Amino acid sequence: MKYHAWPAVLLLFTVSSWAQAPAPTPPPPVAIEEFKVESAPAPGGGSWLRLLAPFRTSPKWADGIAFFYDVLVEKDGQFRVLSGTARYANVKAGRQAAVLYMSPSSAERFGVPLAAEIRVGYNDEIVQTFKWEAPGKKAPEGWGTQFERFPNLIQPIYLTPFVATEYGKYPDAISSQ
View 1 (cartoon, rainbow, N blue to C red):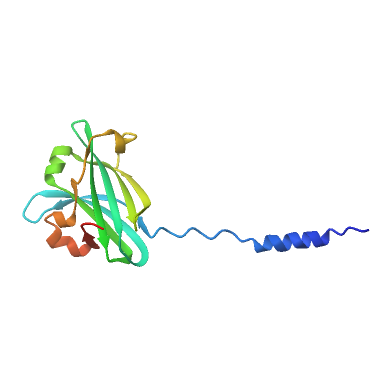
View 2 (view 1 turned 135 degrees about the horizontal axis):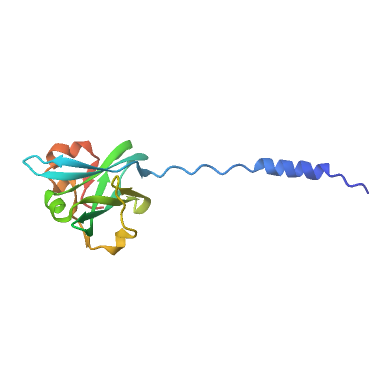
């Protein structure tokens, strides 16, 4: 009996041609592109800090988007972590920005941001963690868990004097889900 290899080679070639490269991973539905700390003079006086996180969304409309900010600050050699949450609804696809504010009193008491970690939630699932360090600064390792924490001192727009002048620049801020 003669053995012919060509049917096996043909079968192997046919089976391997059915296999395809894996589909590319789709982008997350919400993704921060950068982080900025800006001075924000308030109507009526005082200089706040605007903590701005430009982001992109892919759903035509999205609800249930949350940005959980942890911000490392330092004053007189003492590090602390301030936190706050921005929640949004009616977010149209494309480029948007999440914003929270640090009051003049918090900046005077605790210092200015050295680093930030922002967790992005969409429909109750964390879809991205974005980390930032101030230019020329190096945050201590493990800063998110080793320093005293002060919750809710990074405030959403509706708790600031900017609610009347800047509200339309950002997606619809909501107080809870």
